[in-house]
Amino acid sequence: MTDATGDRPGKNAPRGAKGPDELRRQIAETRTRLGVTVEELAAKADVRARARTRAADLRDKAGAMTVQLRSTAAQAGHTVHDRATKAGHTVQRAGHTVQERAGEAAHTARRRASHTGRELTDRASGAQDAVHDTARQAGGRIEQRAPRPVRAAVHAGRRHPGLVAGCAAGLAAYGAWRILRHPR
Image (cartoon, rainbow, N blue to C red; front, side):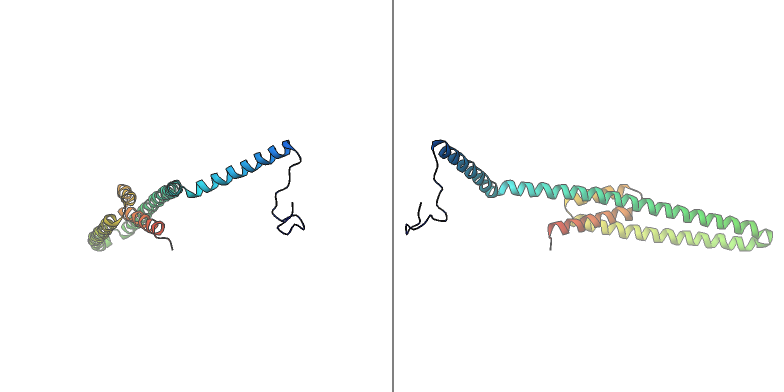
């Protein structure tokens, strides 16, 4: 074929078929390409399916993050518990050592140490209660503002030893949710 001037074949001019079989093959090839193109356009136009896919991806990410946060909170709780137990044993061993060395001459000193120990225990208990209440209040505030999945993480954290770790998990889950909801 020639272009509009009739001098030479055009750039986009279709190639001529060399017979009916060649023409059928070209038609089948064109239909296949057209079908693929129509399917691609239909997939791009299906906004609802794309939104469902995106939502499913985000749910999967949130689920994985929740599992990771729960695991991290549990590990933090165990770490705090282990450290507190070790510190308690250390204090107890130190008390026995002092008691063994003091003898009868240190009776007064032991009485003072016992009194001081009770005061420290009372103060530590008060401090623990204050931290516990502050953590509970912070967890409650976060829980009120957080979406339902984050609230579930906070409740799970509360069931583990160490409320602080549970609240930390809730806070971390809330932060993760905020990041997923409002990416920069």
